[in-house]
Image 1 (cartoon, rainbow over the protein chains, first blue to last red):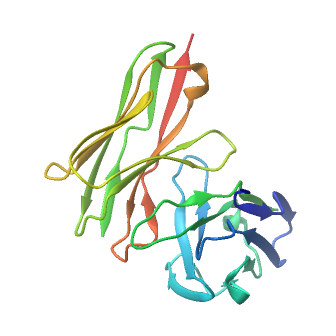
Image 2 (cartoon, rainbow over the protein chains, first blue to last red):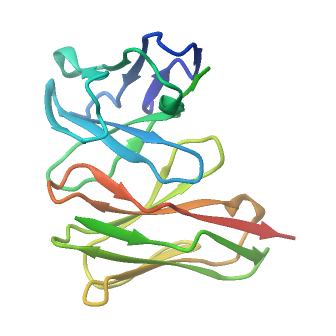
Length: 114
Length: 110
């Protein structure tokens, strides 16, 4: 049973460039979440998918951010026109079941915007 | 909205017992999670409490008091590998997203 995987693990980009991250959830999990974490803080929720439907978005998710989950399997998170404030660890998690259920996190993608 | 409060840092000695507290305010309660996160790694699930009382899992136990808005994580027989950040989290009012506290950084010393 493989866990949640994320690619790339590290990304360095220049301000103004676009970046895209990929998350592959645990195969039988129909829920997928994106979080952002900065140093010394807990993860902050960005968005949530149930299968292919994006059901919830945080106000943190500005219009420069877009997430997709075509076919309800892997997901991508794109950040357009990156800013230095976007530098963070981007974590993906997946879960299954009804109501609040245990989320399993991937190793994250560390983004550095120069 | 929700508010979660945890101590920022704690230090304990190898072999000892440590209690990490979490207090919270929320308009609706759907349980409370504890996660462990080693530096540079993903958070890993430790426990989920939805009813009052103590739940024990090996060296780790978690306690919940819904009336007091209070939980704690109890770590026994501390090992050096327990040095990590411990995150308290509540499901959001929608029941899906997790709202995390800032985490408690635990340092275990020899």
